[in-house]
Image (tube, rainbow, N blue to C red; front, side, top):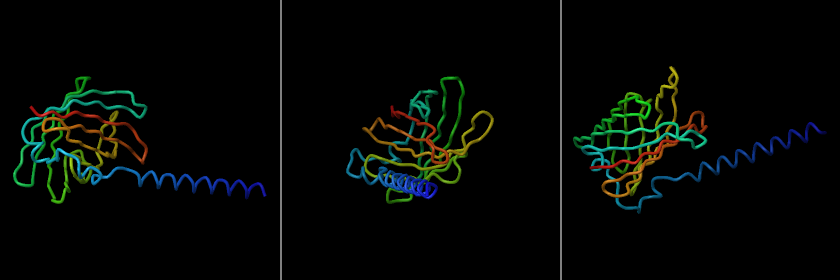
Length: 183
């Protein structure tokens, strides 16, 4: 009788945990939540010409483990854009990422870069844009495919804030925080 009672308690516990995870998943923000917010974010306008971003990477405990500056140049031809990013890290390392962006209409975006696995899918509404993508991230001589839930919020015509949560197998690894500034 004790074995059955233990099994029932475990099954009940698993069901409660699954329900909590399901509810938490339903509670995540969506771009449509920001549809009425202004100023309205237009990637073609904001990412046109030179920009600078300052950022940090925080580990899962919240400790800042890396600081960086990104010098960017954006250019557009119709609905197609290129965003050339040059990273300079506090430890002296450098990196370059070139995004190829496509406006699919109705607030939907696609992005491609050499270290992005597949396609980055974006959805914009109001002052916000949410990108979801997998990045091939080199760590200690190995490459890890990590998922990004990346949010950008336009503050005014010069400043945009960016917060990206990085995870693997659904486990949070850390967070990237950036402040973009147009000259």
